[in-house]
Image 1: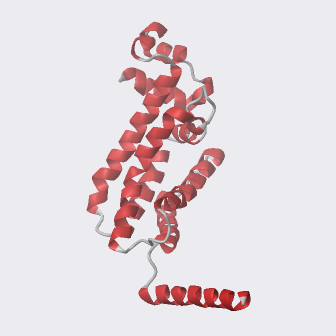
Image 2 (image 1 turned 90 degrees about the horizontal axis):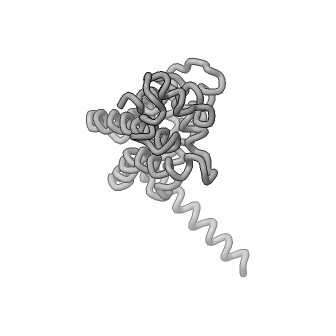
Image 3 (image 1 turned 90 degrees about the vertical axis):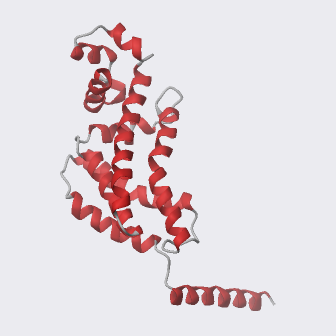
Length: 212
């Protein structure tokens, strides 16, 4: 636990490339060999640090999500929790996950972190699936497209926080972003759906007429 705790500190401050197991050992007052007793190397330790961090965020989401009564409220809770916990410990872990953690190089963290990211996005995917089943979220768009629609804007906001070191108003940002996302993912009203269906039928009829 101590190695993972100090590893989080060092990776947050240095990033993956500049962090060393030597510094982690020095901060703990132990030998580097002791670090290797528990972890085969820096890569394995960093994956464990990211995995534990994801687990903390997932636990917070899963604990609070049932308390939100509507699909929209649950979406806002996920957005707010995501932004808050990514920034609550500073931008170091945020930068680690968004940059080094997403590297696609064969010797980098990309392949190891990808399964963690799938597990991390599972609560949102479950929410979207439940929303589609209840008719509250549009069913004409595949879940694979809805996922980046939600996470993409959040990552841009986090990247800006990392790059500028500027403090953002998490409550206001989460509320505004949720309003924007909800307008995109919510199911259309019956009247609007009928108008869209009529528009599609008219377009097909015009195309058939032109083809003659």
